[in-house]
Length: 86
Image (cartoon, rainbow, N blue to C red; front, side, top):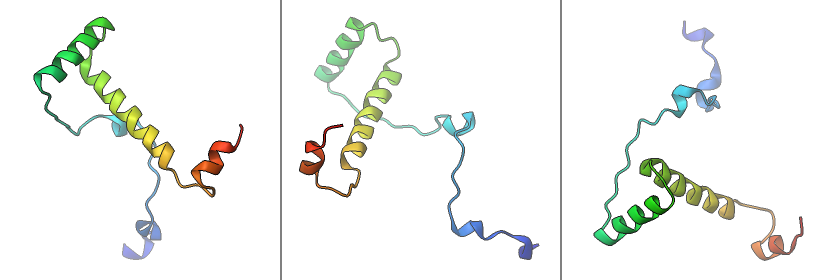
């Protein structure tokens, strides 16, 4: 049995984004003080946001992804990249 085993165990294979892979099974919790909670409640009410969990997750992930894009290694310095016109 062991002889037919592929050597792909040492390399991580890319997994497809199936619905089961996208299922949220991890929990993250954080605390707010009264003013922070009031600010979020007011914002959600003003903007008719009904799902606060979805809203906070999207804002957090957008911030994380923006930082990943800013910190992505490049061949050139940031000041050189800023001068490039696309």
